[in-house]
Image (cartoon, rainbow, N blue to C red):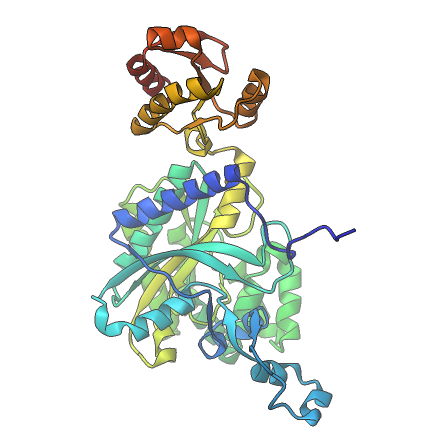
Amino acid sequence: MANKPSIPKGTRDFSPTEMAKRNYIFDTIRDVYSLYGFQQIETPAMETLQTLMGKYGEEGDKLLFKILNSGDFLNKTSEEELTERNTLHLAAKFCEKGLRYDLTVPFARYVVMHRDELQMPFKRYQVQPVWRADRPQKGRYREFYQFDGDIVGSDALVNEVELMQIIDTVFTRFGIRVQIKINNRKILTGIAEVMEQADKIVDITVAMDKLDKIGLEAVNAELASAGIGEDSIEKLQPIIKLSGTNNEKLQVIGEVLKDSEIGMKGVKETRYILDLLKQQNLRNEIELDLTLARGLNYYTGAIFEVKALDVQMGSITGGGRYDSLTGIFGMPGLSGVGISFGVDRIFDVLNTLDLYPKERIGGTKVLCINFGEKEMAYCLPVVSKIRQAGIAAEMFPDVAKMKKQMTYANAQQIPFVVLAGENEMNEGKVTLKNMETGEQQMVSPEELILMLESKIN
């Protein structure tokens, strides 16, 4: 007996209903991006490993899906190399391409390649799948969609403000209550300087980023295991435990970082962004969180992260400023800032909270019953008129028992059924049945359209 087919762990199939929900997410975010002047692009699913490697830190590099070279990939590999089993070395020889890990690095590559065609500042949005060789768990997938928006070619901090407005607008439209967390990599760098551990900035930020997951004691243990001394860890404690309003936090951190030039620049940038946001009447809370330390190596200024308040879920949106990213591809000095909506996690949050609007996830609204060839020929023009009115309708294709066709309508959650037998055809009318109430009414095709429009729209 043939084995039952399966899909790789960390991937999913989506039913028609699920795709309707996902398209609602895509359409909502796309509409908001467009309101702010963003334009859509796409990039290939695979990039050269030269483009991808070294952009996400050592941990990120390990999570890249590498694509085996086609043809005889062993041709130029010696027996000695195979015997040594040096995985990284062999992967570099066997694989020249990889699946994209996110949309930001491919976008940076796109900007460099198409620089002469782009008008700066360039505002783009992009919705495509990305892949990570991660351990699958709730809210974490190996294949998932991101919906990014980026602005390149402008240093103005008003761009950060607009991105926060976009986040606020999107989640308000979804009906999801969120907390928008903000920090600045310059502040984190200043903290490392004050701790006299400037060369340990990555270790410090990676550990701080885990505070919510593993707790203070475990974070301190991780810092110690990274070779950070007890005195330096002690200096970090007031910063990790900092509380109060955003202004109060900024005042404290400004005092702590007063001798760090880069740290004070981060404080100034953050205060400017928060002050502008106060004037925008956002519906969701903005919180300065100094433990927020997104691990990606390319962020250089403001960093953002969004958490849903009513569902236990990881970050559902994140981003930041990455001034030096395009320099990796030979174009230094081009500033950029962006955000990424985690579509799959947003999908799960909306499912958990049952926030999908019913009118957006339904399919066919009207089913025309097929009693025979003559009746079908009579009904087809009626079905066409319903569709011309912008209402999804279908004709049952086979002559089948009434019960079977009604069962199909119920299974597909079709709210209305149109019937036309000899009596209806003689009068030039049809019968409209409301599947929820059971109510039936004989009407003309013109009356049918008006009734459907009033009940569906």
